[in-house]
Length: 373
Image (cartoon, rainbow, N blue to C red; front, top):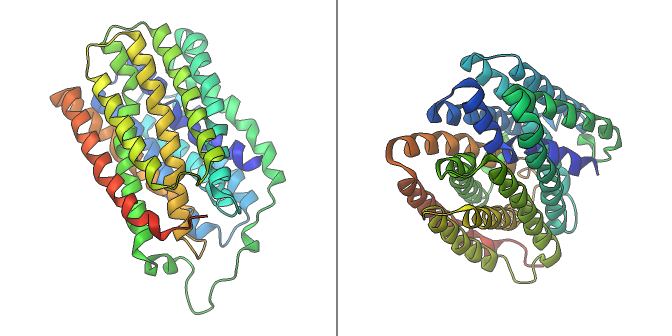
């Protein structure tokens, strides 16, 4: 339970990114490039904390690290609500992202210790999507019209903050891990392991960058097509249900159909979604496409995480999975903002599809090296 709540808190900022970006642009008058860089600031902090966690988990208990994550997350959100300066806002989002990354990284680390990794990662994905379903409906309809961007930040701090009360139920402690060799720095040991893991982490970074770029501007795409804010809000909420279904499929199907087929199926689904987004669509196509986008993102993500985790025989790389995702999330929205502003949506979708195709090949190459049971 604590790990699921931590994962939901750590992923909330990313899952709510379309609403946060849209509110920032409307309330603070940010341009697309500035909005993309704002999102990148959040995920820069996310990335730094995930990498730092590799070293911190050997020195501090998970309870201390989890408490720190909640403090950084909520303090950054509250500070962001009180500033209108773009530079200071970037630093606030950086701090908030640091806390979110720490929480999600710890949740992935705990889930990776289980005997049924597909099920455990599926549960994490479902928990974060269920929270996002409610927030993506409530925030745009009840908070944004009255309090804008600042209201979102305060509401998130108040909703996510109480999760710190579950930290005291954490059972997995850093001192329970196998002791490191006395002649080797536990952190440096990370950089001498098998190349397949780093290949997978690099592929996950690029894959996540492509999808994060699309997700960051999916709300703006609806606005640019003339869809009402109410229908966009409903569509995004429904997309979270798709995410829940994707996570459930991972937990229920596990390795029944292998791990290569889900990768190929997801690539085909994303290409179809990009084609739909490129059309002159109405609310129905927008809603269905966004639903499928979220469903297959969570579906394929579960298998990607399991493939990398199963290659990690030393149990030291799991915490770098969210770091790879965060790095992709840093790069994706910023690059998407510049491409869309300069060339439009079509070239961006083509670039995203190419990135997904190449990185799917990465995972197909390393998938046979993982466990098959």
